[in-house]
Image (tube, rainbow over the protein chains, first blue to last red):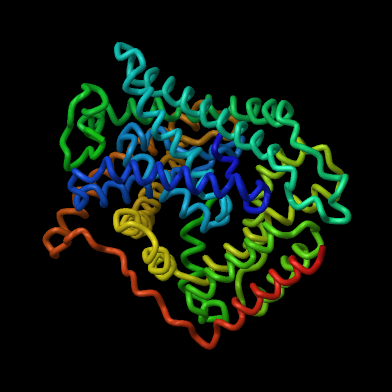
Length: 237
Length: 234
């Protein structure tokens, strides 16, 4: 559901500033957790998988003009810390392409990053006896549901600021009401439901494909131990 | 749909006033327009700003029609957000321009600034791993993009895409994306090996920020005018 990249100027300043603060903390924690790794090897992996995410976003699924995010796959392959960094990089590049605002990079990264982190966690925790397709698909659905709820939470939080858009404006005063959170939630969840199904089906199919073609990429996730560090990168992250 | 390859072509091939301005001046221009969008309480100053940027972009030879179309992407979220507000046309107009005006400013930046120049500005403030990751993402993107393009051509030639068949299209795209991730991981191992041979020590991104130039008057002047209009026009 993070396809709804929040643009600039819509949310109150305190909210996007808070988003930057929380994102900076999350990024600092991620980088701290990565400090023991061989970054010379991680940077190429981080770059290539972030690029793969961006390439996948350019693919349109006809006939509904939907494009995938693949943040859950990035989380599964890279691990939560590197996955969060990849989400930040993808968001930064998206913001510089007009997809999502500059001021809300923090909030948008928290949304996309939460999918990567939660996708990885759910993939690890969920019913390990399940086939890879269902395991990764379920992890994707749960992660996307959570990020949609987070998005609704962000919109609901924007109601806390009475000065939204500045109510001192002559015309604005009296015209700007508060956001109807139930209405927004209904629309976001309705549209999101279609997105979750498509994204989770594709996530399941992609992870299944990877597990058949190059299983060492998922070795850390499937067996709970480090795979080939040179190629997987997600191990122990 | 995000057309990074086309944006990169526009950024690298132009020679107008915006292309000649320094990256730091254009980043400041974007920040000034974003500040205007945040402070504006009326759609009129933002509409003026949008028109002003359209005129400047046209005069500078930028692809304005494509930029205007791309700036509309921002309204997807605004549409849902606007429907949830109990407001009238005024609110919708304000929301529309709050979303599209900064988006157009960002597009003005990226269609006139090659990404490595932009990354050099960002690298001054970002940790090394992120700065290097950005540059590596940019470099690898085009390799993977070509790879994916070839895959899609092959699928189309073999009748793998059927208009109206969501399941079949999704299944084929999934295989392509799976292959993309596998190739990306292999590519990263190869890139690392090549870079290690060339003496890679963990630093990659340039942090040399360009100096200001005489052509910077356009983005800086326009940014200041737009912010002033937004502050004054209450």
